[in-house]
Image 1 (cartoon, rainbow, N blue to C red):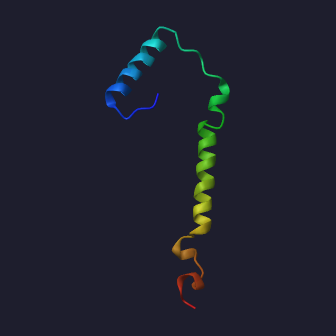
Image 2: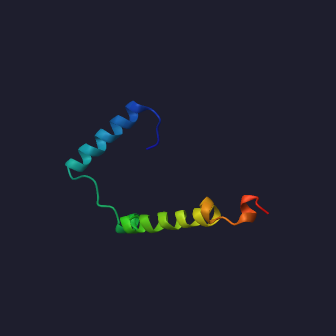
Image 3: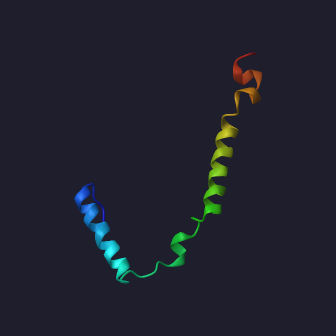
Length: 70
């Protein structure tokens, strides 16, 4: 379901809640959550932060050439 209409989103959410409470929703395959554990997400964030810091080191750690002090 894809929608920008609040009423349609509300109605779909209500339907899913009713289906879940009635036991009509099937369990998702475990593969859908692969890579989404808290540890996996932190590992990915740490890599992103490390990449950003490597490309943009803190001012105190930049070389004088990078700061324009040639």
